[in-house]
Length: 100
Image (tube, rainbow, N blue to C red; front, top):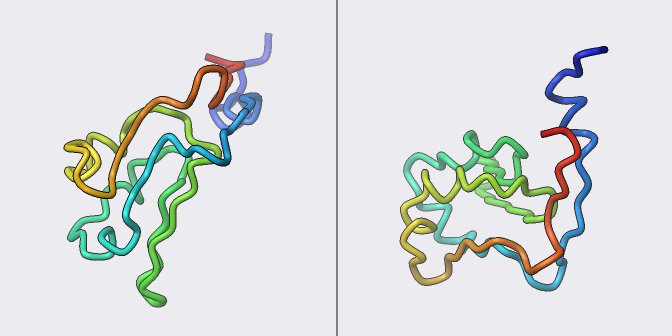
């Protein structure tokens, strides 16, 4: 039996994203003021992006692995501060893991 690489295993996952009701909400303008922007390097799905040259912060919930890493490294998200919330997707939506 062939052992698949992590990238190959992740590629087998399927997503049924709720495009109209994101399960993670952030304030992109407020995120620009974050000193460490830890979410940009802790997210295994690379959903958070910071472009220092353009002074632009972007986020897309589609493709989220629902691991919660961002919630642990972002105090604003962890504390559900104004403009921030993290919830699991609506029933039947989100990631469908195929390979553990």
